[in-house]
Image 1 (cartoon, rainbow, N blue to C red):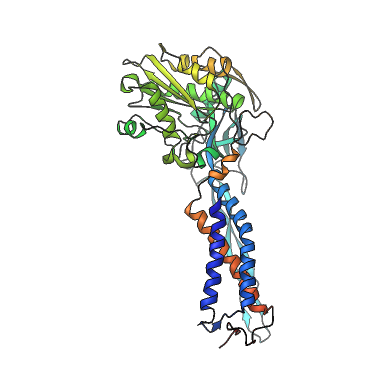
Image 2: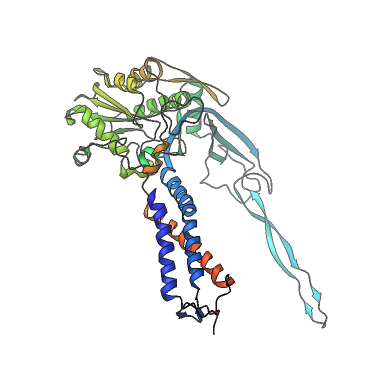
Length: 470
């Protein structure tokens, strides 16, 4: 980028000019005066450093601009585990109180060389005594390799005091956590809940100023005003609900009574999609009567979800957009439109999904009822005949587009060439200018201090050197 080179060059010229015209002025008892040769050498040196500053500053600025984008990685719960923890003083139990105080000497008593006596200095510390004789930990493992310690340090249904007279806290969970039990049963049934987490990645397409590859729609503002463009994920600025889930089915208007089934069906679908094909589907459900042009609406959804409003939380490169339009009764699908988070690829899948119509709007029929068979932290997925499931996994499998295309198995074209089109932020320009000023300061300080040519007193120079003067 030319601007990264222009900034240090202009900075060097301006500083050299200031030194030439104002170098002899006395500020705070210091005269910075240089010979003509030193001024020329300094300017040449700082200009020679400009390409290096440009390269370092430009690289840092580009890396900052293209990095830090968010995408969701998906998987499934694999294990629900528990353990009993016997409690003892200063042990591993989480709920305790101070007990059995004891003295710790900080400084022993002594008599100094003048015969003065100094008393002992000490303080009291305490042991940790548990409230109950035992605690229980309940946690989950998922196929992404993460541990979810959500119910740690619970008491039994009828906890016993470890030491009488101190009572049992009432704000600590007791018994077996119902949610942990529910998830354990679902895993055993082959309906393991889907899990998701945010991951950062590099996106050259969204960071660049190249508008050809970016989604655009002139209808975004109109649909927003009509309340037809929800975010790609509920609470998108902080989407994680309970450490492992996010709602990726968004509804235009009121959510239906079976909204939880929509979320569950998509979460389990995404679990398989993430582990098998590295994808992440988001669905917007809209009344068909409110959309005048299905294709225009789909384009507006993608342009909005990857627009400036979402910044680096825009729909990720592994994203699949599915618009589901329902009839007036909400029990059947009138039409579907689909797109992805990348400008190319998966055309056959998008076409097949966009051909869906007149099917029941039952989540497990439309999306699919993906079953899972965990083995340790691994999962085998069993696919059924869900309408969307059959297309995405079997008929026209999703292929995650690569951004840099440098890993084995990557498909698509590299977008690294868009680096040159990345727009620098104001802060990036500031830091390049700061680096330029710092480099200039070092060069001029060395020249001024060393008197490189030994000409500080020569009469032919009308620019004199005077060291520190007071």
